[in-house]
Amino acid sequence: MDDVCQAIADATRRAILDELVQRDGQTLFELCGRLTMKHGIGSSRQAISQHLEVLEAAGLVIAKREGRYKFHWFNGEPLKAITRRWPANGRRS
Amino acid sequence: MDDVCQAIADATRRAILDELVQRDGQTLFELCGRLTMKHGIGSSRQAISQHLEVLEAAGLVIAKREGRYKFHWFNGEPLKAITRRWPANGRRS
DNA sequence: AGTATAGGCAAGTCTGGACTTGCCTGTCAA
DNA sequence: TTGACAGGCAAGTCCAGACTTGCCTATACT
Image (tube, rainbow over all chains, first blue to last red; front, side, top):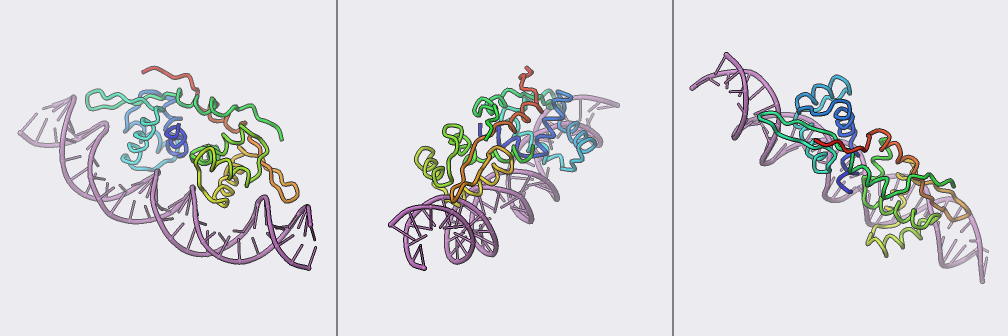
């Protein structure tokens, strides 16, 4: 729970999730390129790698290593805990 | 969007939301007491006040001043943006 | 073998934000 | 009008975490 909320608190990590939703199974280098091109994020490869670690720890990204590549998938299931915790039926004042 | 994600990233603020869901319309002092008693949070009044500002800015808390009291209500509507942005249908690897 | 590619590790820097302290304002009751 | 109570403002401390730099490992290709 804490991990998930922390994970989506960063704008770069939210952009990573957006990217993976749009195209699943990307590698680290692929993500770096697309984040720079389409999201205007100029962070280094290591920065993105560290973000992916956080997202993985939160369960929002699932990674699998194959040979020298590591592919990443989006997993939205942990997000359910948020709306499950707080009923989103907006109460009027 | 950024405001909402930042707001729920803090454990104390999440506890405040929990408190307000459980009992709407609390004042600052009331919240301080309950957070200490039931959530083991020993932050100062000012700390809680600052957290409430953040939650208010994110739209997750709606406050109304009446005389010398200020009452707070929970509003879950902004949370919808999260599940709207990322489809929570967990994709299998 | 050698080289390029994909990624990991481990420092170190530096800024945002959580929290405190101290004082001030405004509201109500005696 | 004096005091207690509810809350706000502002400056300062301090640490988590975002980011970089530099080097290392492992896999593939020729």
